[in-house]
Image (tube, rainbow over all chains, first blue to last red; front, side, top):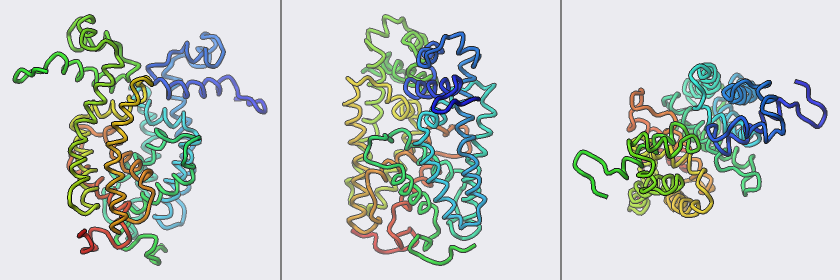
Amino acid sequence: MTVVAGSLSTRERILRESAALFRRHGYNGTSMQDVAAAVGITKSSLYHHFPKKQALLLEILELTVDRVTPAVRAIAEASLPAAERLRRAVAIHIVEAVRDQDNVACFIEEGRYLDPAYRDDFVAKRDRYEGYFRRILGNGIEAGEFRRHDVRRAALAILGMANSVVRWYRADGPDSPDTIATEFAELAVRSVAADGEGPGAGGAHER
Amino acid sequence: MTVVAGSLSTRERILRESAALFRRHGYNGTSMQDVAAAVGITKSSLYHHFPKKQALLLEILELTVDRVTPAVRAIAEASLPAAERLRRAVAIHIVEAVRDQDNVACFIEEGRYLDPAYRDDFVAKRDRYEGYFRRILGNGIEAGEFRRHDVRRAALAILGMANSVVRWYRADGPDSPDTIATEFAELAVRSVAADGEGPGAGGAHER
């Protein structure tokens, strides 16, 4: 993919416009003709890049999860207390989600429209991503930082909370991404912290 | 609406089938023809009940929020510690959401497709519902049960967490509604609890 300074390749513009359309009208409410018109190319040019609308959706979803996975993986593997890793992972998830809002909204809301033939890869990548959250939660239980809990359901709860931001966040709204990320990360850490392991508890945070 | 024992009125069947179709294919991926076919009536009979697809969506959303609002209101106004009220409100929200999964999924995912002319009533009802959660959070801060926090954003976080269940819950899955509701309610209460106000802290829960 060649990016001319200050401009995007046709392929990148297709991906960007289609994510915005999918988010606004839904995957099933957006036609390939709508995408071509938004990009300002012919339908046959669009089909040259993406032979099917499914291929477009799949690429949006995979690029989205590939973009944030390395950062969350690095956090999960860092030599830090689990509470601090969970705090950072939730915060970066939210900051990236609002920065990349159209794509992440597609990831969360439109992924269910992937045909079964495409779904396995997507689900595997999503599961690997969610796995870093489960790993942090499990480490925290082992270390006594977190109370005993079901890490699979807690990861779903915490990611559900974090993902919900893309539904109401507005760049012109009252809440900065950093404020939301910091507060939601705090809620997440406290939701699983062992009794007496709040930020005010001090100590016990070495591993 | 007349309900013959063991059967549903045509209007009720229309609402039920359209919620299932909207959830599965999206509002914009479902035509009035699809709804008529699913119900087994003619398109003109469908239009007799609902002159527009927007009217159908609006009625699903309003019935859904009207169904759960009285119970959550009663909890918010009960003479109980805020932590106990929050626990019950989150739990009933989740139990109702999975019991009424098609409708609640529409409420969460398809409400954004309401035309502006219809949106005000829906947003007002949704805001009133969310207001009961904000009230409980505010009461908990006043009573010293909850740490100081932004109740608007915390209510969004907690409802985001609770709503996410409709995306992954399956009746044939490993998690019972009660298990999910109990665990998520616990996560929610702990996320805002004042230091030393965990369930193990004892006392201090009278008002």
